[in-house]
Amino acid sequence: MSFESRRIFKSAVTSQNLIRELLQLMFLGDLIAPGAERVWLVSPWISNVVLIDNRSGGFDAVDPQWSGREIRLVELVIALMSRGSPLGVATSLDDHNEAFLRALVDVATEAGLDEKLTIVRRELLHTKGILMRGGLLTGSMNLTYSGLELNDETVVYDIGKKALAEARLNFEAYASENAV
Image (cartoon, rainbow, N blue to C red; front, side, top):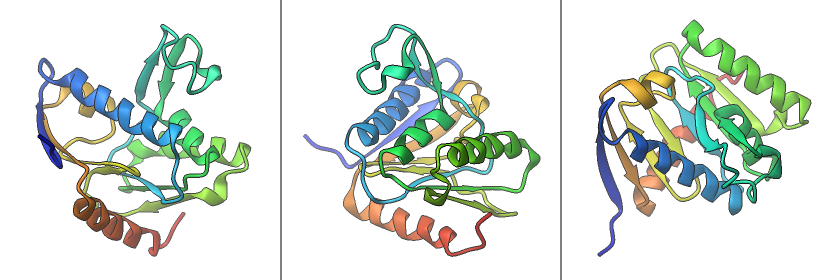
């Protein structure tokens, strides 16, 4: 039996680890076999959340510099960019996003990867999605601690070619807007 999409209902006490593990697999898959297509993070509120717990060293083979610590979103997307994947971030104008965006731009500039980074700010953005080479995660969840850990959320993970292509067209439209 195969599937193209899976719906996950998460609360603070159910399926929380499932979404974290899914995000880990999505990022690790693209880190191991990066693509030339832009990775998209679309979230009205976004933070530098912990996505991989490598305190046991289980992911050292992916990046030896990760040894014995938690890995946050900025470090993961910089690793993707350094392996050839451009990154698009679409977020709202909310001040909450400033710390994440500032950290991302600073690290990308320091690593000489700033031309691989596209940031779009939209006043009325409510769309949420993470688009990688092999999968799309959409739903109600923002990329924040509350979204991952506390809030009740519904997300859909999709690997269907039609859904990925449709999301890519819509997210790439953001790139044609004023980038900052």
